[in-house]
Structure formats: structure tokens, C-alpha cells
Amino acid sequence: MKRYVAEIIATFFLIFCGTGAMVINTETTGVISHFGVATSWGLIVMIMIFTFGRISGAHMNPAVTLTLVLLKLHPKKEILPYFGAQLIGAFAASFSLQLLFPENDLLGSSLPQGSEMQSFVLEFILTFMLMMVILFTSQGRRIEQYFAPIAIGMTVGLEALYAGPISNASMNPFRSLAPAVVSGHTEHLWIYLLATTLGALVAGLYWKWNEGK
Image (cartoon, rainbow, N blue to C red; front, side):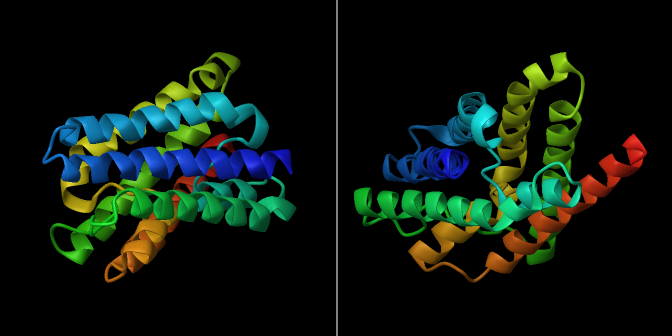
């Protein structure tokens, strides 16, 4: 139960701070800036992993949980409780932002700025890269494990910085699901549910092949 509660809290703050930065940037007509939003995403990921990594692993992402379970790096019996915890945290964050900023239309929803296929391919690549960093640092040598939160957070920040203007750089199905459902903008949701999951799974296959497992 401690792990599940930690996962709820970690996912809540991920979505609250990440999409919250997007919402507040809109509400203040760009005070935070795109760079600030990308930095917020990277920092909150790093902070939550440092804080809750030793308790729940701080997945905060069902695509990460699914991949780790399939690679036998996380107990299979915990996949549904983790999904449930991540959903609770994500939706609690989006409803909180809606309560705080009722006039905001998007609430940080993931929406493609170009074609759907462009964002689909981009999200696949972004999540593949993120999952590789997660696996090769968290499952690497002790020194790599120590710096894993920094590497993972910097990866999220980097990807949000350069890809955010095109696809919103989701890399996380529930990060996109909660704001989309709460705001009512579900028109492109399939991209962010499917592409991110596939990207993580393919990265898992590559890691398994590379490690000879």
C-alpha cells in the first residue's frame, strides 16, 4: 500500500506541476515561457524520482510500468494497482487544475500542432528515447543508478524543449489522458495512448536484446 500511495502522490505532482506550468503560462500570457514549461517537466520528474524512487520506483507512467513488467523487472501482480494509482494521481491533478483555473480550456492537453502522423512518429521516438534512458541508467552500474533521476529528468526536459511545440511531448499515456478527459479535448487522444506505449515497449525489446536476456 505504501508503494501505491507513493505512486499516486508522485503522479499527482508530475501532472500538477507539468501541465500546471502549461496552464499558468497560458493564464499569464507567456510569463513562464516554453523554456520554463520544459524545465518544469524535467525538474518535477527528477524530483519525484529522487523522492519516491526507493518506495515505488516512481514510474508515474503506465507505459513504463508495462514495459518493466514484461521485462520481469517489476512484479506482474502490481501492474493493475500501479495503473490504478497512476490514474488516481493524474485525474486528481487535472481536476485540481480545473478547480483552480476554471476558464482554462485545455488544462495542458496534448494536441498535435501538425499532422496526426507527424505527432505519432514523434511521440514514438520520444518515448523510445526516454525508456532507453530509464532502463540503461536504472539497471546499470551503481554510479549510473545514482544519477538515473538526473538523466531521466534531463531527458524529459530536453524532449519537451524541442518537441513540445509540435506534439506537446507527452511520452506518457496517462499524462495525456487525464487533461484530455477533464477538459473534453479527446479528439487526438489515440495518438498519445498508442504511440507512447509502443515506443516504450520497443525500447524494452532493444534493452533486452542488448543485455542478452
